[in-house]
Image 1 (tube, rainbow, N blue to C red):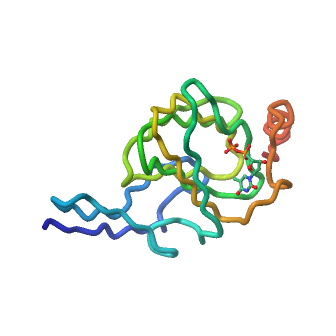
Image 2 (cartoon, rainbow, N blue to C red):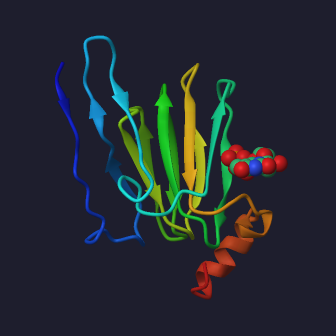
Length: 150
Ligand code: TYD
């Protein structure tokens, strides 16, 4: 069995920018294993996990930003795109590796699309669910961008 763990330090991480984070991966001929521990592998305290699955072909998820919540988005199965906009430019991240997570700071408008059949999108977040933390209207998001309050 080949095993290795990655020591990650978040001290130098720019938490204002989306970042791909490598997660520990235990390689094994019986199948690989990845894990996360609070305070070690994710740059925020994990308050909640949710996952999206059975997404029909051609469907889009997301379509919102957060005031406060930080997220780590992981393709635990399959493949999908995460499109992130800061109001000025949009960058697309294709997630298809269960041993990587996309860190999304607050203030980024996100849509998720191009789901391969059977994909599972797991999201770790820094806050419990609170609808008041969502900006679901794109015009409102752009108004926040214009006033520097997103
Ligand atoms: P929604 O935010 O629209 O999903 P996404 O933007 O990821 O495509 O959430 C769908 C519904 O689920 C909505 O009614 C809110 C509810 N929900 C919870 O109750 N708790 C949660 O943690 C999340 C993420 C959503």
